[in-house]
Image 1 (cartoon, one colour):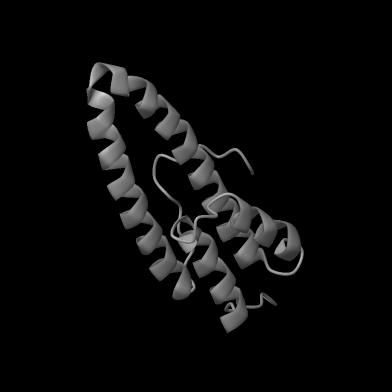
Image 2: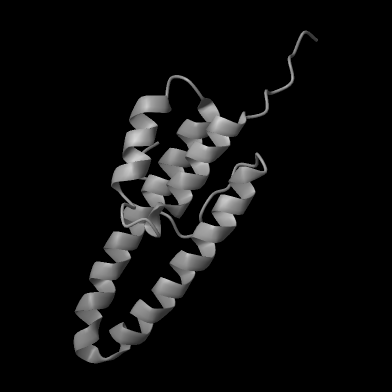
Length: 115
């Protein structure tokens, strides 16, 4: 019964995770989460979780985008690319808001490359 309550992330940790999730708007969706993960993985479990989640999401989106680009030849790919773009924006904002409040957020339809 000597369990300690989980520590809440500090403001620096929250800043790192919000930047990871919003890195898609900063034109560095794969690089920033990878750097944050490599630097902070031993310091903060909260930051490591969100950096991995963001990196997995952006890798999945890259794969989905390639598949949609191929389907552009059959016309439906253009509509799928637009839907994918809207989904990326909405999900990144939701993830940033949830992580800023200290919650763990898992993106839907994400392939978990990095465990």
